[in-house]
Length: 542
Image (cartoon, rainbow, N blue to C red; front, side):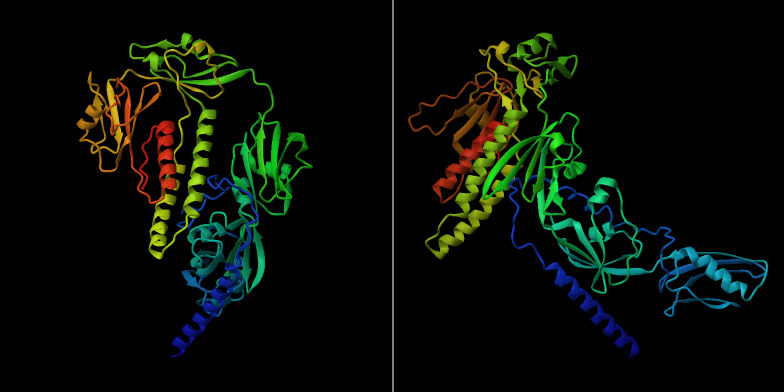
């Protein structure tokens, strides 16, 4: 009966602590002041809670550890009196040593354990008695984790476990909601410590702290963000501790590249976006606030650029050449092999890929806006539109993951001596191929050996014909050099002539977009086309 009463009282205590944890967890940042628009950029530190901490136990020597009820103490006595045992600290905070009696250890620092036991023994045995003592096993405790974490709850661990382990057990901090820099540890409803995880992320420092049963780890809502990009090794979204922070302070986090000597600050003033450029030595007196963007760059004049040479050739894979070098200059220095397909040389350029990505993002945002603002005249139509909206938003998410190639298309008639290379260009020499790749909405996507006199329809027939979702008006032929031809197999008048298929080409059959909204259908079709051309990928709509 007494045991049942004790369990009820313990349960009530736990529930009262839990209510306290929940009370803090619902305090969210209701007003979103951030002006950040790049939702795909990673938050600094967001990847640390992936289960790497939660499985470990920090059973380590800590001289400041306070001995608790349930701890197991290993005691060895030799000399005039011999004794060896593992003793558990009882509910009264004592261990019992035969012939010596009870020794109170509750709350005693670990550094004083040996001397405490030794002094107790000396009262009984005056001489020739030696003692060794250590805590062999710590008692498990329960800690509440609340606030901006994936799973608010009560988690078991050792009192010497770090805050990282308890947060990891809760699934980690919620992206963009929970703070990495404003975490409280509460005991008896009082804040006893503030934790800034940036100290661990940047300097590897984790404070040694001893938890007690019923402590609460409260991850507060995040308040201030800034976005950093450019010539930095940490292009992330960073959290600020105060309403404004100097750029010099931000530079402690971002690992600036040696070439950077300037930065661009984009901020909001009276509802208007303003951008100002500064030299690096102005960082001390320049401040960022919530929603600001920092871009670090170099305004030195660069005489040399780096070019990557890939594909079928002999020689160096990386070249440093003078600015103004042309494609002809590079090709004239390359030693080709018998398998080099020189006529289909390709250039992949970062700046082109960036423009393609921006254009795609613009179209995706327009599609999102159309989807979310579509009106419905009836309940049935509203239900249909809701389901369609889910499909469209899923398509948008998948489309955002596609990375354009940034290919610069070069034909046989182009003057290679007028194609100037940029820093970071990838010049690719294709290997001679006798394969035609057919992908997309065909029954059996495949790679087929080139067959002379075969047209697009012939190759698709070999692949089992068009799929049920194939858009026969959107069949693309990607030439080996990157040129694209569109073929309409459903031409009503039969005037469409299949483009000539050559070895190394690819045939892409796009899919139909089933939507009640003509504008959405048009937008999705255009996006599918842009992805196929820019990334050589056939993405299914929905």
